[in-house]
Length: 102
Length: 91
Length: 164
Image 1 (cartoon, rainbow over the protein chains, first blue to last red):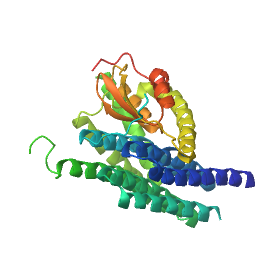
Image 2: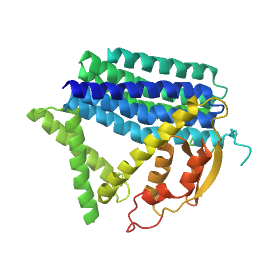
Image 3: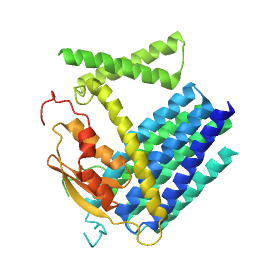
């Protein structure tokens, strides 16, 4: 059982690191559209690593089923929210800072 | 131990997101940061539920994950139109 | 009509499984209340005419599972790439805004395609319509990867659905 514990710790730790990386990313990237990608990290893999780690902690119970449901909801709702944000920003005329030498 | 690390990391991420929400030059940066804070709150509640052994609290995280999307879309609609009651075509 | 019946039944089973997973109760009273609420929701969605082949794609299930495996691999590699770019000092990104031709014929496949583009960090779908997708990408490499059409080919699509 200590083996499962260690794997779940690795997952939770990876998720924590990815979350902080995404948090740094939204301060490091220069404009709104590139910050969307930094938030994409915290929405996808950070959440996924946390949920897998917590599922390994709870074992095969109804709690792990609910955790997986949270992951499924995030999996469907996060791209929708991100797309709504990007679409609205583009519609309102916010210019993206693009690479010059293309 | 690992839960302390996880909670601390989530709180650091939330504070970074809040800083962006306060600084953000455009209103969309702020909404983006709030969206991220919402996602991290879901994870924070889930971690706390498993940490304290009260797995019923995962239901709250589940509900929060749903409300987060509706909230972001509602705020976007409000920012874009200035109200909630038109569908964006008149005035 | 037979499609509608089949989809009603599968939607009922799915909703009841969801209710049971969320509550986890075995009482007779609670179970009957759960069945009643499930039937009520199915009746409402039947009245609202929201059950059809695209909104409840029972036939695509196997292909969708294979696509999700592909998508999770893509998401993991894209995550590693974006994290590297965050911590690389100096000029680390080269944002692009470009258009992709829409090769999908049905609304469901279009939604899956655009959503998977957005879900992959490094590329965000900004605008989508029947002819093209406008994508903002963080780097030239991920833009070229999308232009190669690898993800568009992986998106499952039911050819028997009518074009919209």
